[in-house]
Length: 309
Image (cartoon, rainbow, N blue to C red):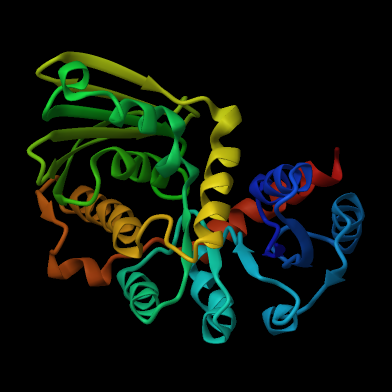
């Protein structure tokens, strides 16, 4: 399988390339490095390391050279325009987390999917082996109904918080109905959400890094689900390549978009003094997370760390 990578902004790009190059199913054949982080020197080194044949300047130059594209821009607001040439050409795309930062882009991706486009994404925390293994337990061990679910993650309110939203989505499935900001202490923000499975969901994000974890209470007791970070990317890529080979989905855009919607509602609740915000609240159309602002703050630090290696 010939894979292209667009915007080598985060550590995900190199980590994915390492995993793919170690296997026999796919290889990186084309890159568009982007300007947020990469320099000419860094691009040359990356291409040499992974044996990349084509370094291009526009997404359109990849068409005909690749079977699947990984869009890994840290500015989530460019995910849709980056993806459009491939969606129009019928080429599947993977969108790294977060999918996007507003409901209009969510709707566009869902519309493309409804027309038959294969769109994969976004957080590897949606696809963990640990959650798969827990859900595979018989109900006499796991329980028949979730009662309370707790999720924790660092280090910000969207770029990283999306991990806990997607991890909860992977566990519970689609069905969040509302969210309410509870409190904050220092850099920790705490929220309560409702899900149509009946569970009360509490999640937090912190200004410092935290291990990815879930706490689950059912009538059978409490279970802590700790995620092995070293297997996250490989598990997701394995599932994605299998889905691609079968020309099928990985997770639906409606599911992934619900994770975005959950955090948009959380933001609105916090800005509204803690009122409960439904996920279908009309005001969410005016709420967004600014991808460019995040990229502007992230890019120089990431570039400096790569150049100083």
